[in-house]
Image (cartoon, rainbow, N blue to C red; front, top):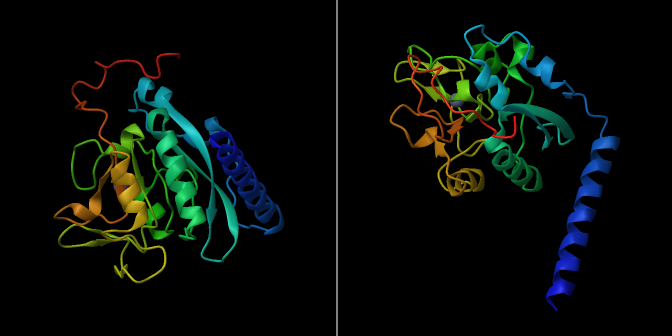
Amino acid sequence: MKRFRHGIFFRSLLCLTVVIWMLLVFSGSSAYSDLTFSEATAGVSDECPEWILNNQVLVDVVYFGFDDKIHRGQVVADARVAGDLQKVFMLMLITGFPLESVIPISELGWDDFQSMELNNTSAFNYRTVPFSSNLSNHAYGLAIDINPLQNPYYTGTQVFPENAEYDPFAPGTLYEGHLVVRLFRHLGWRWGGDWREKDYQHFDKQLENVSLENINKHFEWPPWR
Ligand SMILES: [Zn+2]
């Protein structure tokens, strides 16, 4: 009986995968990211330690766009959270949660503000927290920003991207109790929507605790490198 159930499960999964790829092939998708790892990390800050770069992997994802088409995107993130991100992207795809753009930020000159303006979903970026000297969790590839336009960052006095308005009823918006928020929490991530200065687009997983001063005292990861 168990074997039978597993058979049904895997056949369903296979069918779902085939359907998604057919949709992808026939959707005539315009938004498309097909970079190599070198391209997706080209031009990273000179200050980025090699061990951090060595931790990063390029994650290919399939997503549902605001144009009702299926698209291919790419995210650069720490290898340890790549599996988490695949699960979240799969959930967003099968629940029809739309994304605007999913391209590595190297394509946007590593400019977080431009990425937010373009409503781009991205993870790794060796940078500090805006208006601070602390390294962001994005610097380790352990954070992701999702649909910044629908899920803006409120600093208290400013909103990023500019002119964005948070409306929990708008498609592509994250809110308390949303399936994506719940899955991230289940996987051990924090959500910026829980913070005093709301950063609705932001999720991170705290695996590193390395200050700028101790940036070179580290352990190697993954161990097989
Ligand atoms: Zn963020």
